[in-house]
Length: 219
Image (cartoon, rainbow, N blue to C red; front, top):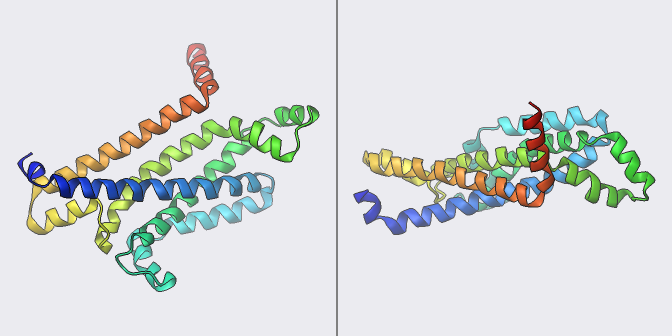
């Protein structure tokens, strides 16, 4: 605790950097994966190929990915943009599968009923498919969020400031307090973001909470 008290500004700065480096790729990955997953759900023949590409992208070592991006994008090696882009790719690779599964979980009978009620293609997607796919999408988003929080730490090895710096600095100076502080804050941040997503899901999709309770009661 003494080390933390003497380095509050440093820790807070790394924490804030870690927060935005985690949230931005999560949001971007979700925003990109949502329309792609909806589109793939209507083209089963292409799903295998596209999802396989996503799997390959996710297997790229994160540190290597971050380090080669400056040569591709012309950014500096210490530019946080490299971390954001790399993590957005990983978030998309994970989220697109959840998006496909989410839209596939919508009952064809419900879609037929909605079409019979006069919904056009856009209205069907936004007012019927998206809400019903919401629980699966939320589950995928929670995985992406936790994964992003974890992967951001790797950016510290490329010189980008975040909580991962507490690990690298702690190892370099043999400071266990610094390492433990970084570990605790990374775990806490992942838990907080996950909790916020759960609460947001309950607010945006109150019907899913009732359905879950009904299933639990039946069991």
